[in-house]
Length: 451
Image (tube, rainbow, N blue to C red):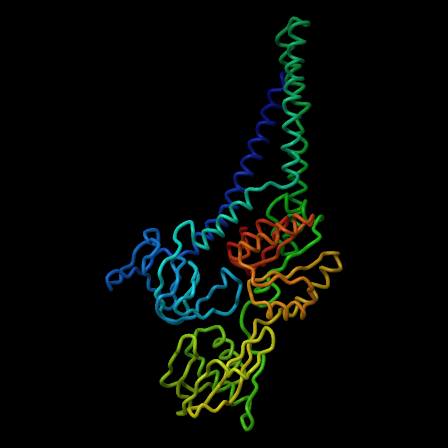
C-alpha cells in the first residue's frame, strides 16, 4: 500500500547497476595487472664482481645488472658492456630485435635475445618506460563516456529538484491534510514516479542484444559506451605490426650470385640458421624447410650477436651476416648475405614483416564507410611508408613511442575527430584506452585486449 515493494525493486536495480559497474572496473584493472606482469621479477645484480639474484624492487639507480640471453631486462638502463639484440616489440611494435652495444639505452620488460649484456640502471620503479605505460592506461581508463557525463550533469540538477518536490509534497499533505501517513505515501509516490526505472530494464536489454549480435560476428563488445561510440567514428588509427602486417618475419626473395642456384643458397642458409632463434633466422629456416624435405646438419655453429652466424654445412664453411655497404634494401626489407669460407658472396636473402593479404581490402571497406585511416607505428619511416603505400593509407605516423601514440590519438580528438584505435601489442594499450573506440585484434596481447 505504501509502495514498499517498489522502493525495494528500485534499490535492487541501483545495487545491481553498481555491482555491474564494479565488475567492469575490475575487468579494466586486468589491463593494468597484465602490464605489470610483463616486468621482470628478479635482477642479476653485480657487486664487487659477484653476481646475485635480487627482487627487482630492490634495484637502485646506478646498480650494475647482468642480463643473459632469453632474460627480460629488469629496469631501464644504459649498456656498459657486451653486445646483443633486444626484442623491443612490446614498446615500439618493431618486429625485428634491435642491436644494442655499449652506450645504448635498454628498457625494462624488453627481452634480451642473444648475447650477454651488462647495464647500469638509469630508471627504476615508477620511472621505467613500462611503469609510464601503466600510468597512461590507468589515466585513459578512468575517463567516462559521453552518456555517463551527460547523465552526471542531469543527475546533478534532477535529483535535488525531485527530492525538493517530494519533500514539499510530504509537507503539504501533512500540514494541510493533517495526516503524516498520507504525506509519506504522497512523497514516496513522487520519488517512485520520478525515478527513470524503465532505463534500468531497457538499457540492459538493448546492450544484451547488441553484444549478442557482436559475439555472433566474432566481436567481443566490452560495454555500453562501446556501442554508443561506434556510429560516431570518423577516423580509424591502425597499428602496423600484427594488425596491418602479420607481425612475423617472412622470406621475400633469394637473390643468388652468378653460378649459384637459389635452391642451393636457400638450403645452405636454412641449415645455417637452424641454430639461431633470431626472427630473421627463423624466417629463412622455415622457408628452407618448406622447400626442402631434408636439411643438412650444421657443425661448429657460432652465433655472433649483432654480426650473424657461421658454421660448417656439408663440411664446408659458410656464414650469414650483414650485407656490404653497396647492397640496397627496398623499403620494409631486411637483407642478409650468405658467404662461403673465402668470403665470396653466394646470395642475398630479403625478409620482411609481410602485409596481411586481407589488409588492402579492409582499408578499402573502411574508406567506403567514410572512415579516414591513419597508420601509427613505432617502426622506422621507410618501412611504415612502404606498408602504407601497399595497403592504400595516406596518413602515416612513424617512429612513435607508446606515450606519443596516446598524444597522436588525443591530438586527433582535439581536432574534433572521433577516433577508433586498432592494435594488438602492449605498446598500443594506452592508445586503445584513450581512443573513443578501442579495437584489439583477437590474436593480440592480453594487455591490449583488456585495454
